[in-house]
Amino acid sequence: MGSTLYSSASARQDTDQTVESEPITFSDAGSTVTDEFELEDGVTIVESVHDGDSNFIVDLVPTTGNRAELLVNTIGAYTGATGLIAAAGQYLLDVDADGSWEIEIQQPQATDDDAESLPASLAGDTPDWAGPFQFDGLGEARGVHEGQGNFIVEILPQEESVFGLTFPELVFNELDQFEGETTFSVEGIGYVTVDAAGPWEVELLSR
Image (cartoon, rainbow, N blue to C red):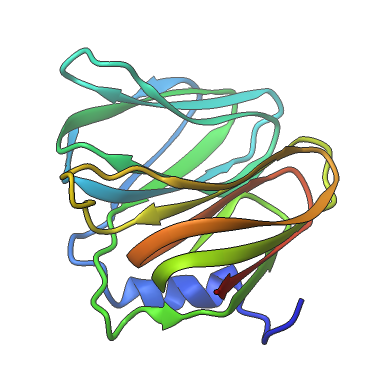
């Protein structure tokens, strides 16, 4: 990897300073449906910890009856994060677990001064997230995954597109061990999410 290692943990420290709303936290043991909570439009990061031996499945369920969003689906102990672009509304979490668990939900909002410019190098061994980063259109990504399972990397844009819609930019969608390069296109501030089943590295470069 070409540039200075930029860890996901350090990226989160920068992001914490720009979060406008208080994180939403839940903790319990076993299978539970949480109280309702409100989300705004935009990037939503969910960090989870589970210390059980069996299923740990977390669904984000809109109270309007729309389709639920699967956040976590794993077996055994788990520490990780995932992200999505949420629509404003009321939600609850449907948690299937056999041990104690903790979940924190946050919706970061960064300014241009908060966001780190590319290049950025990230590394970890669990599902994680990093940001905010400043993107300027076409970029190049280099990825390495040493696990047996999913390797999915997305960029979540903070701002709406010119058409009033916001969609994640899929960078990698691979299975098992992988090493390769690809391009992406994002304008403005964004956050990176990595779903991985083992050690991984991601480098993001401007073109």
